[in-house]
Image 1 (cartoon, helix red, strand yellow):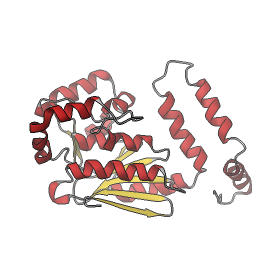
Image 2 (cartoon, helix red, strand yellow):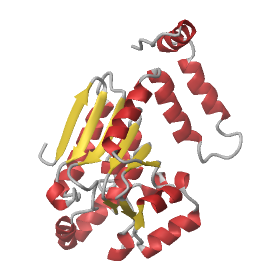
Image 3 (tube, one colour):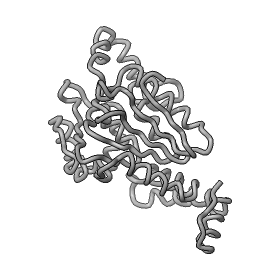
Length: 264
């Protein structure tokens, strides 16, 4: 890979945007590599959690403007890519570098420092948890360029904030500091060292049964915005699949014996 680093250690994958000299802005290469790495991680055995982060002082400054400029002479090709996702895919070419992380069945944690705007924010919103440093600045910047956010933001923002707040952020392209971003729901927690905190959280999560962790993610993702009563069948379906599994039994036995669980 040219602009993305992947490290897998004992079931924890760390994916690092590696263009620090460009504040990790998304190039055409990164669009492809983010999707390919995410798709490969879907098939990785014994994967328990993923950390998304950026090299250097920033998470991601959005789409690289040089890449954006290359799209202008080929607008018809761009429109075709937007309107026609690949066969069997929900997300189009521009959405899939972000949406692929929502499709992983394991928890994804974003460790964020510095600038996290535009496409970078939409990438961060694809994670299940966002841990950000005090210097973090966030913004939905597409209106500044006469556009709307279209890289999967509709899949995350409704779970995080009210519609009027989302409209204000989109329409103004306002930049928020870390504290305000946390209050708005864009950040899970502000921490002094996001990457270290992400590793600690991943370790804590990985101490639980894999089926319980992945089932919890699936339950929230599938039911959070449903009408009252609509999620009951999904609760029952997921629980019935987990109950009595080897790892579930091990969790009970370990808890009763007051010993660390040994999950498979």
